Length: 249
Image (tube, rainbow, N blue to C red):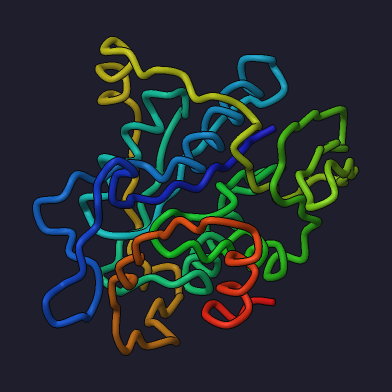
């Protein structure tokens, strides 16, 4: 079966983000960018399915500008067979991404789509669910284990109370959690091989999708500086401060 995995180019998780001086967003000029960590887990999961002879082909897809090709090359180096960039200059929001991915899915006809549960830039955690709704496919979010048997996927989900096991009839959507796997280290030979793998570029307009944002960001602010803590001599003083100063009890 064919597996599609969606990836996103974001500010590297090791970088301390800075807000633009006009508070219109996050400054990404001269900032290291990389693949969203949850999406790396998704690509690794798809690659392992292929190595286990469950999947026959892994297709990596991303939406964005030409620079996003770097992220796709990383996915190809991890183990994807080919890649598709849906190119657009628009500010992409989860609904637009889901619509673009839906168009790619309808064209490629995969049996499974694996996405990261959320992106670390907007933390929306919506794209997988929106895609499942648009396609009318079953979904399993926050997956920590995926097993495929025939036309069924058994997914272990991480929920507030512990773990939940669900069965999905393929085709289906799965979003990955941190404990699903640990992505492999990308070696230099695989990076060189990735340069020879096919990478197609599609225009968003060619898919008949308007990716224009539906929401407008009014202002972006850095969080307020955390106040220094204080030591208290006894429990009575602690309770008094919690009650009268912090007003939490």
